[in-house]
Length: 610
Image (cartoon, rainbow, N blue to C red; front, side, top):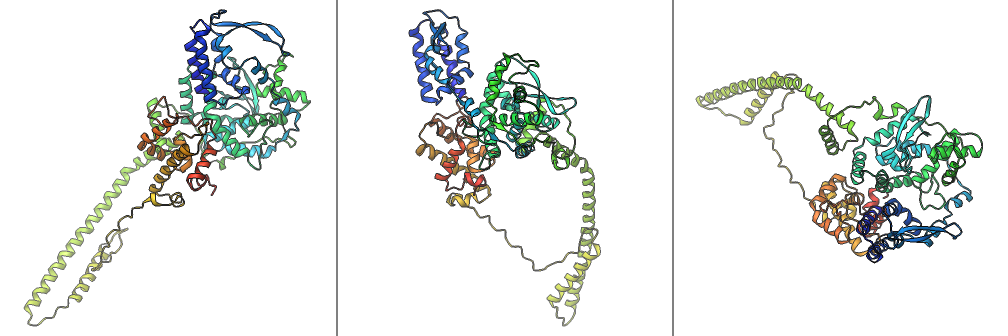
């Protein structure tokens, strides 16, 4: 939704920046407010923050302001509501966003103080680190990213795009960190603790950055915001936060949650991992007073990174206090990387290689076609093909030798067959010359069969075995393949089969279920689900490439349904896979569609819940 809001802010700015009267500016502001009310559900506490993120205030403050033309002088208030002065504000800032009363209400939040006044919640270091280690060993980019967040305390966009970890000599559990977010042009470099060995963490970060989907995401956000790093970071968080938070809930949440839900939050998320990291790393590495531990935690979080902070700098500790609601009573161990023999993908040391851009594109295409884990797997398979090609001349020579042996056997059989024909002809001539000769055809066939067997046994070589000749062998005609009408099968039968025809039917029924849900159950209050590759894949349980082919064959129907509810991909109408489902509780919607329209055989079964 923040992307759509940013487009609207840009549109408002472009249409009003040159206007010089309240009468001209006001209609555009009213249209903007109406769109915000109808198409977003931001609260007073969040609207100001979101508008700031998309550059609303910064844009209009950059314009030359003139009293009575495009701006008006408004009073400034202190914490007690007293007027302390006046400032010139653009009409758009006065008419849109939050007014003075709204800002007061927004700033009355007690979330941090509520957390500090609560008893806090304990973390089990062993359980936390065990799950973090499992995530780091995964081959799924979202799980590895969450594992890195859990063990370094960095933000999602820092792990995905900005963070750089450099080893520190003599320190096995610290790295020098570059890439801190939310510093407005600053680029601090400071040491942070790692809950797993530093070299292992650096290795996993490098693996994540080399994945095609990560590289593609970074290229897209840079293309969208070529000169605005903060906007790129927001775009990365917007695209990845939902999937990363889902991993956090699945692994750290649940009935026996390793990470308790924080005060003021509905679910565990990446911010909870950051808070847990600060508690664990501080308990492990820092001894002394509560004050020294608070300073240590603040430096790990990057809230201030000066070697000798002044009292003024210590105001940043208020931000650190917002993460101080977890505590630890057990010792926090120094966790090492998994043993080499237990890591199949680390049996050999990896090296970097340089390739042409065209060759890299070819490798990526092969990775997609072969469904390989990474570039390394593709190159390994190509090397195997090359080795097989080197063996082909030898294999061809051996094949030619076998062919020569078979030709020799065939010639021998032909000679013996000619001899048998001659003997048979002689026998028939003798029989004709005899006055009374009774020829038993059964005996003749038995005799011929015996002779043929003798010939085969005499000329058999190497791997060639004696052949038994059956004079009355009959070859049964092949059975015709039975065509299955999957549309007539029940949901249980369709989802219980792995046949290609069943897969097509799963996707078709999933598509119809989404359409029926949108048409009959959904209210339109942000709960409709766009038909995308991801939605059909989750609901049907079928391979993403298989779903892609199905969407391509039914593109007109998919585009038509998405457009019906304004969920089409406006940048590329021919590509139904849009970001219309961002920010929605897709798991809940898919579960509802599954229960109402698929007899409980789709989404739950593919997730292993049946």
